[in-house]
Length: 517
Image (cartoon, rainbow, N blue to C red):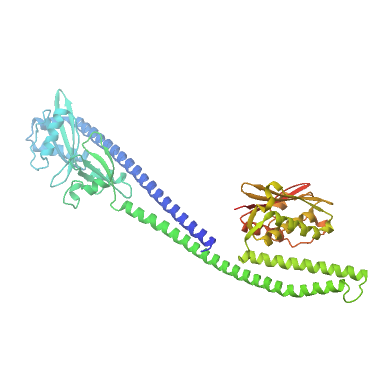
């Protein structure tokens, strides 16, 4: 698995984890929103029912005051069925949805007998309770004909007090429940018995429900999200979420995010395939390039060596006397052959380094001796540049070959030759190039310092890249491949060291740091 594929896999995993976290947060937000909806629904329902009951109580009292004479006459003559029928008609005209009506004295004793069976024990208890407490707290009363609730009012006139009792069918409350109910939730009017008694739902009173018990089950209690007392009644407004509401929400969220993740995964797989294909094509092209460079380099090396040798023989008069003009031309050809040989060697070295096939013969060597040999070799090569090397090796640290490093001496000399020749090429005219070897606790440093124009910062940042050439010395027509510093840095790093540069106008220092262990 290459780094690009690994990167895509990691990104896919991270995005998957983020999607999971976002999904959890989204579910939590939805749940909290439903809690708020539930609380608002029960508050609204409790307020609406409270207002409705108060309005009914006001209307019942108003009806009693308007028809007090009729009510008083019936109280005085309870056996008068004509008066009783008239009262029923007046109530029906005033309250079209009423269930039953009766009147009692202020002690709660009925004036009219209930021949229709519309007044049960709970109704009678309500009358007695109202007579003693003067508080009317409605609740649902069961009846074979219709479940209902009672509204009572005390009417006083001419020092006579009569209690007017009118009951209403419970289904009128269901309309209020239905208007306050929110999607995904079930609003109920409940009575606070031991387990909670269902009084009214959005469908109607509890008698129309198809269930064995009208008490809330444990599962329904678990689904209860909010509960609010209805002031002025014995009821509570209670909200239950639908049985599979949050399960379905989870399924929807999981489906949505799974769909997004599958699309993302598909894109990532497609990208992995593209990256893999690109990597294979790049490797194929790289292999062809390396093979081409290797073939061309090896094929060129032999004839160039032969050409160089032949030119040298001719230039030295082996084939006869050579005129000064011809000697000049032959020397130029020989220099170009040498330059081409360096280019071929650099190309082969770069190819070997990139392929990981560069051979290193690591042995213990006296670093001071390696440096002295390199400087001596370069002094002959750079005589054309009119520069001198000033070698500084502290004898107290490096005498008797006591500082020995595990290095490939030929490769380190290759690096030193490159840095020393560059200092000669780019240094000042008649420059004295300082070459310093010094010891520290972590290893040794070799500093090569010239006093030329310096290297600008924008050039320094690319100095160790392949084919990097400085343009500030174009007027000197300095020949080079742009590969030497790249190769040198790779060789030093293979020895677990570093190659760095510091530069300012009039001062450039290339520093090699190598560990002693």
